[in-house]
Image (cartoon, rainbow, N blue to C red; front, side, top):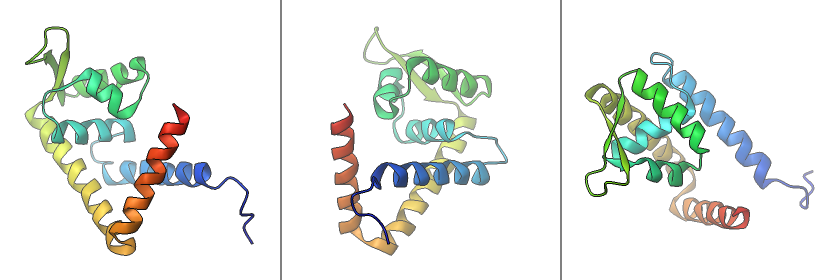
Length: 141
């Protein structure tokens, strides 16, 4: 019997995050993606010419961590840093042709997982889950 007052949210999120990381490693073993790299590529596939600041805001990585992720992706020929099209003060990150193929593959795989979960629990539960996540983010700021 579960202790209702015991912390459950953080352990469940940590477990799900770990499971997602293992799934990314299995699914993209052929290209050797880490979870962080996979999510950055998927984000860039959905948001062309995103500024580095956009990536930082979206993922909350330390700037040094994000720089390392981008360095690895750039070394593999999947992204390039370019001047931002609307601001001289920003640096944009864009996918190369090879990076776009991987980013779209990751984005599609994540979309499929979400659709499968949505089919199991329904839109209302997904909405409630997102509300909990947003409330947790607010509490942690």
